[in-house]
Image (cartoon, rainbow, N blue to C red; front, side, top):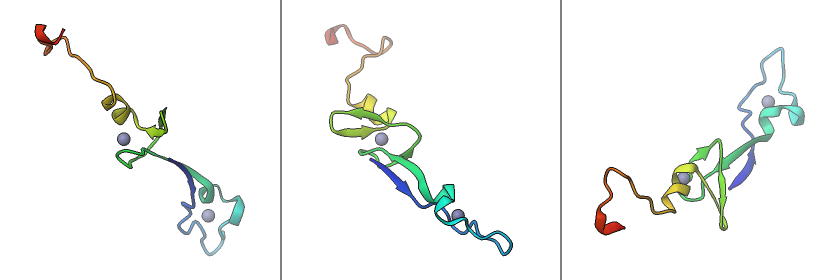
Length: 73
Ligand SMILES: [Zn+2]
Ligand SMILES: [Zn+2]
């Protein structure tokens, strides 16, 4: 999920009021993983979802050379 949020939580001070719509914090982009709902820096488009790296990897079965059994092959 991608969204633009208003992260400006009072950048205004007595001498410098918030610059309003041009305040970059008011339009900060957030990327959320559709599975774990975490706010992440990077998402991967997988089918209809936006997934973080961790959840994306969970979508795939993996085998580890150290733990794989001959019966798995
Ligand atoms: Zn502001
Ligand atoms: Zn995730």
